[in-house]
Length: 104
Image (cartoon, rainbow, N blue to C red; front, side, top):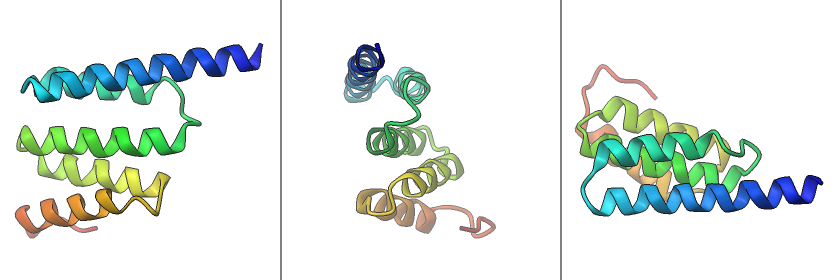
């Protein structure tokens, strides 16, 4: 039964992430944000995928000019996976463009 639940969650997570990616590629950033957020609620134990989802949502936030939220999402990504270099790089990029009042 646990294996079935895990399989179902993995399929749902993959589908939601792909839907988010599609919306992002189409320039529908608000929908992409919603889809990535929904995906994050599917399986909190899937650390690597959730780190990617946070980073993807951070990219969406940057497109929406929400740099503080973008930085926070990448911070959440590296909290889940401290080897996720892309999240560090994006956070640094957005940090450089953001208000000096922000702190890491």
